[in-house]
Image 1 (tube, rainbow, N blue to C red):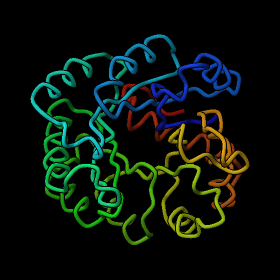
Image 2: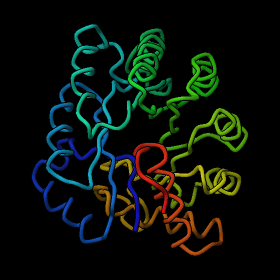
Image 3: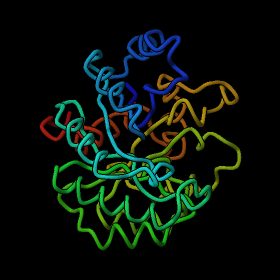
Image 4: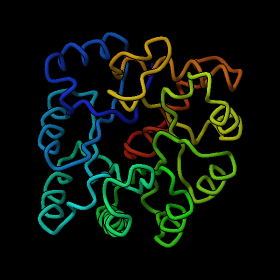
Amino acid sequence: MFIDSHCHLEMEAYDKDRDEVIKRCIDEGIPYILTVGTEEKYFNKVIDIVNRYPIIYGAIGIHPHNSKDFNNNLIKKIQTCVSDKKIVAYGEIGLDFFKNYSPKHAQIKAFESQINMAKHLNLPVIIHSRDAKDETLNIIKNNNLDQTGGVIHCFSYDQAWSKKVLDLGFYISISGTVTYSTAQNLVDVIRYVPQERILSETDAPFLTPHPYRGKRNEPSFVRYVVEKIAHIYNVPIEDVSKNILNNFRRLFLRERREV
């Protein structure tokens, strides 16, 4: 019973076999998948997918790479999309100063604007942060997110930074990179993060876990992420899976009770 709390099933990588990819998830017994639309061209596809498949929920937001395109028309489009009952989060939003596909000032403006929208809509935020940990933390601190909560997706920073966002009530989401031989920093982070605050994700079609690295990623591969997390915690995989399930429900499906 594995959870993929962040993937991109609406992307073109799945246009030829999306139904088969999702069937593999169903066959795997995955109860919940969160697919995340990161730019306007994907929003309608997200809405279509989440309403076709009971196990799939959605998030809508403008990725920092596309922040330069953020405007009032997009705000109206997002407000329309998030009215769908299966859109359960706002994201992914944040800052990416590694690639800087959008200017830093545009990223910061879009990030702050979308945090305010998420607060107004009472939706948890999914935050992308790369090479921008100080700026990201300052924006989170300056915008009280106690009520909405959120998650740092595809966590890549160190243990010290994880403590800071955990103290602010955030969850930490771990992707397939944890299965790579270079992921010692994530091992240290996971050992520090309480099981009640951790999530698993694939970020598919990206970041394919070992043993499928080099191939297209898909949500059914999330089992390898959870297996690695359980190994690091040195606890049965069933225990970790149950905690991740409850964490997902607590953050994104708040009306559901814990098991």
